[in-house]
Every structure is written in structure tokens, then in C-alpha cells.
Length: 179
Length: 130
Length: 104
Image (tube, rainbow over all chains, first blue to last red; front, side):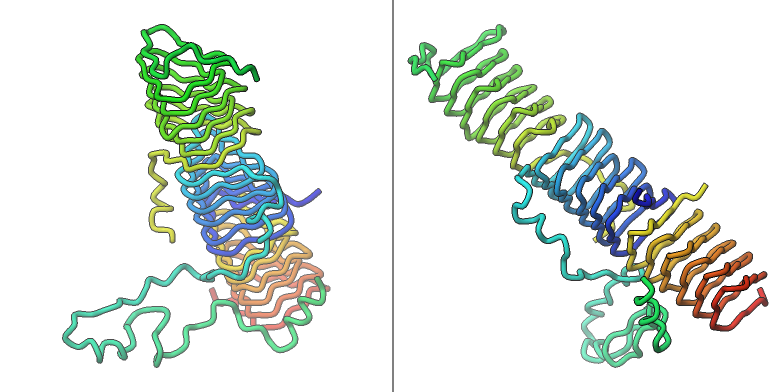
């Protein structure tokens, strides 16, 4: 039996989540979600991600596009802002959608992009955009001054600390080999 | 399908009674009225009813605009629906168009392509996302 | 009750923040912060800094491990990184490379 994956209701995930199994989201997920099995977005869940799976069942809130190889079920309580595409789509009374909904035969275009090129996945929570323009007086200087107090600096500043711990030489190969 | 000529005039002024357009009826033109309407045959043209609208399983409707209170669709529709009440698509429905209504439900098995515009707020946790 | 479970066939690339227990059977790359216990099961791969309450590791962790309580490296665990916790147990058969800081 495939191990069940659960994002608990007091858990926040900012990540790209992928895999072969089923997943149940009760908490907050931001990024991207692609699983080979069933994705269940429960009533307490808040998901800001495109979701791809074989089957998708939604009872919670989603901001993002849903696409499934088999079916998408929007149950009572579902609130979806985004497009919904699957060969079979059902919306129960009380399921709410703002977006384009399409039932289509399997193998039609969007399903084939199961593996998407890595979209921006900010490992750590999104860094707020650096202020675009300071008051115009010193705009040339401001552009080159390193903004203060931000995790990431613009050109000329120091590189941001790595999000992922740096692997010692050889360990990564060892890790991948064992899998 | 029987090619019986429509005996109903293109403009149907309904009373509170339900009007039924039978399977052999073909209408091209605008239909409006206060009561309920069931379309079991073929309609090409706009429909504006105060009451409920039912599109039967074997019905074909092509329309720029469908307005009614509750709308249930079991047949084929090309066109947009603007309902003041709920819109229901049953499993046999084949609908191409945008749906507006107080509540939209779609049974699994229905064929559908179009926009849904439910009015609701996402939880605050998603307000700032993306 | 374990509230968050990352199943064996799931990969997470990014950050996981949990105010509850986390059990990892699959792969996490990025960062894992939990308020409660963290269990890295045998077969799990964690390439991330991990922080949380009591921790049990039987799988692989590459990254720094910080616990407000205790860290237990079980037999078969492979940990590369620094471990900081009030109490640390390293079982026979656990592989560990890094510094230990028990000054919490």
C-alpha cells in the first residue's frame, strides 16, 4: 500500500511537492503539487498552488489550476479560483468556482505536461520585492545602494545565504546512490 | 427526429403555468415568459423566463443568452446561462458556455466547457499568495 | 497523533513549517521546522536543516539538526551536519559526521 502523505492542519509548506502516492492536505501549501495518486484538499486546507494528480477531491480553498488525469470532485465547501480540467468534473452543491472549467478526454493537451520545468520555487518564503523606486531625488544612487535589512541583496551586495545546506563533497552522490 | 413543424409561435408568452416544448418541437426565435419552461426539443435563440428552465436530456439548445431562475440541464446547450437561482447540470448534460447562478452544480459525467463565476472570498491565507 | 506525514514516495523541495509532529518517510530538500516531534524514518532522505522538539532519526539527514529537547540517532541513521540539543543519543550502528553541541 502506498504510504499516505498528510500535510497536517498546523503545517505550512512552501515548496514543490511531487511524488507517486496519495496526499491529503489539511494545512497550508504554497508552491506546486504534483502526485501520481489522489490529492485531497480538505476543508481546513488553504492551497496556493497548481495541483496535478490522477484524482483530485477538494473541500477546502485553492488558488491555482487543477488538472487531473481521471476526475476532479469539488465538494461542498470547496472554493477554487483557477481553471479546472479533467475528463470528469463534478461540482457538488456548495462547491464554488471562479475560473474556466472543462471536461475533456484523457490525453488531451494539458495532462501531458505532468513534468513541468521547475517553476520558481522559493525555498524559503517569498522575499518581498525590493522597493522599485525610492523617492526620485537620488534614484541613481538608490539603485546601487544595497537595500538594508533584506535577506537578499541586489547586484553588488553579498550573495544570500544558501537555503539548502551545502553538501560536503561526495555525500550527495552517496545519498542518491542509496535510493 | 420527427420534422414536425412547430405549432408554437417563436415568441411564447407564458402564464404562471409551465410551458413544455416537446421533443418534436423546433423553435428559432426568442422565448420569454413569466412561468416555467421545459425544453425537450430544439431551440435556437434566446430564452428569458422569470421562472425555472429545464432542458431535457434529448433537447438541443443554441442561444446567445439564457435567463431564468433555476436552470437544470440534462441535454445539449451551446450558450451562456444567467440564472438568478441555482444551475444544475446532470450527468447527461453537454454544455458549452459560461454559467452564472446562485449555485452551480455539475454531476460527474457531464460534459462541460465554460467559465464559472461564483462570488466568494478566499481565506485570508490565500489573499496574499502569488 | 502524528499530524504531518511525508510519505515514502513523496518529495518536497522547499520549506515545511509545522506546529505539530512531523514524520518523514520520503524526501525533503530545503528546510524543516517543527514545534513538536520530528521522526525521520528509515529510508527517508532529508537534505535540510531540521529544527523541532524531540527527534528520532533512522534515515538520512544532511544538514544541521537543532532540537529543544533530545535527538536520538538510531541504528542505520546517517547524519551529516551539526547536532544541537539538550540530550543526544547515538545508537550503535548510526553514522554521524559533524559537531555535537549540548549546551542548550
